[in-house]
Length: 108
Image (tube, rainbow, N blue to C red; front, top):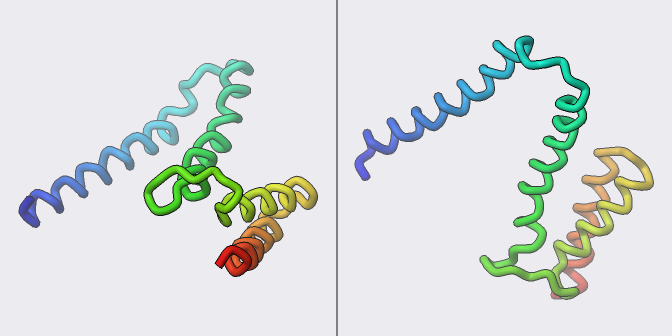
């Protein structure tokens, strides 16, 4: 693929992403004000976050690793526990990173 084609592809992808996001900002007021729609849309951010995080936790070296010797799994469980107990994003990130370092040192 030539450099020009690559740059045009990247620009097109960026434009499509921008237009999708702009559509909700510009035309969001035309969406129906249905409480059922609002209730369903509340689950979109956690679903997207889970889809982004799950491969980082369960995929190690390009293959599925959901076994007890996966340090990312233990760190994620500890971070989940801290998030549940404190409700603090900063505490969750700090605990998850510290747990990952400790668990990786333990398994190494």
